[in-house]
Image 1 (cartoon, rainbow, N blue to C red):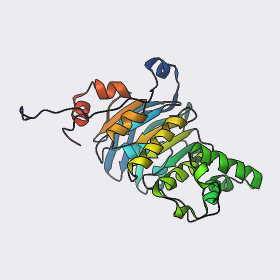
Image 2 (image 1 turned 180 degrees about the vertical axis):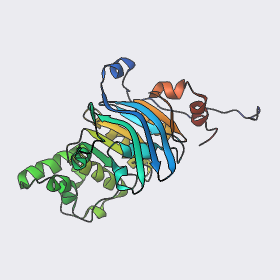
Image 3 (image 1 turned 135 degrees about the vertical axis):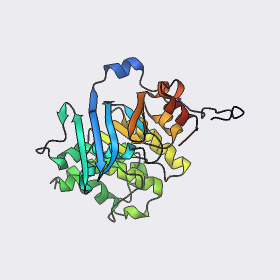
Image 4 (image 1 turned 180 degrees about the horizontal axis):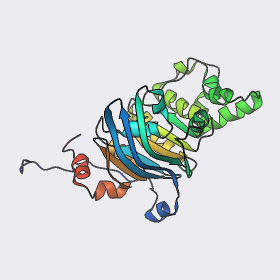
Length: 278
C-alpha cells in the first residue's frame, strides 16, 4: 500500500522543441506497423502481442524499465534478432505496406533502408572517411567522387563535418565519445535509409554531447522516420512526437508524447512516469 505521507511528483519535463501536432500526426501515414507481434528467446516469451503504428517523419520514443522488451522490439524492425540463435517471432511487421518477414525479403536491403545506431558508439578501426563510406562500398559503389559526396553529405547531416573535414584520413577512434556517436549516425545515414533506429544513443555521453544528439534527432526527423529507445523520460519528452510505454513485454500505452506524459490513460504508465517503479 502506498504511504499517504509520501507525495509522488511528476518529473519536470520540457516540451520546448515544437512537436508534431495532433492534426499533423493524423495526416501522416504509418511507416511501420506491427500487428500482434510476439517474440521468444528460447522458451522465454519476451514480447506479448505488440500492435503499434509508427508514423513517418516523426520521432517515436520507446520507454519502460530495463528488461521490458523495448530494445527487442526495436531490433524486430530490421530483423537484427535474426542473428540471435534460438529465437522466434510471430505476427506482422509491415514497412511501407509490405511485410518484412517473408522468406524472399532481402535482409541486407532491409537493413540499408532501416539503419541502426547502438547504445555504445562502435566506429570501425578505420579512418573517418572509410567509416562513413563503408556501407556504400559494401553495396558496390566504387566511384571516388560519389563516395566523397556521400561522406560529406552524411557528415553534414550528422553535424560533424565542420569538426572533421580537415582530418578525414585520421582514425575514427581518435574522436571523442560524442563525435564517435555522431560518426555512427553518419555511417547509418550513408546508406540512404528511410528509417533510423536508435537504441539509447546518448546514454553513455556527457550532457553537452547528449544535447547535440538530441538537436540532431530533431533536425533529422524531417527527412527520416526515427524510433528511439530511451530510459530518460526527459529525453523522450524533448525529442519525440509519439511515446510508447512498454512493461513486462507488453505495450501498455502509446500516443502523442504530450498526452502520455501529462495525461496517461493507464495506471501503469502513471506509476512509471511518477517514479513509483522502474
